[in-house]
Image (cartoon, rainbow, N blue to C red; front, side, top):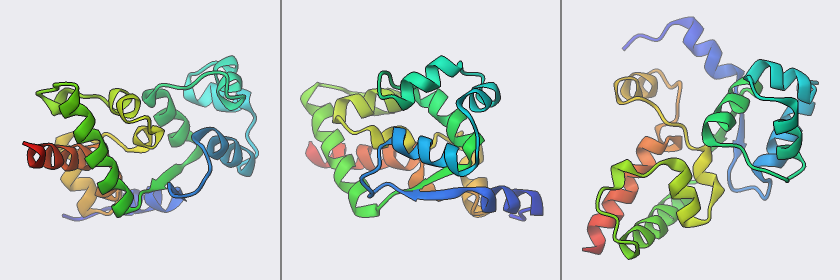
Length: 164
């Protein structure tokens, strides 16, 4: 697969944050927004969110849905790097919790549900890529496939199967 220069420049524009740090999503957004000298109002205008939503999120009063977090991360060019061992352990935890709850079809579980179930908001950082674009983006190195919810859910399915 051939990758064009525009796709490569998009990848280069991202700032990568390691999910193993002690920074919360909120702290990461605040830090990055300040790094690029953007006000909450400017970020709100670029994401379609309200300034009030961003203010409450940054103050820790409310959370944002994964779709809204995706918008914020896109505008701020935030990309996360996930430690493979941590992802494996997290997938194992999720599989156990799903089994305990009697879930039968793991593929229907959203990132929000998985994050709530595991008590780990890091899952909200994982990108959801359409199946048709997943291989293309991975081949062009536009994504690290291990930082996608697609990859994570396959780990959970494997762990779930091992529990039977």
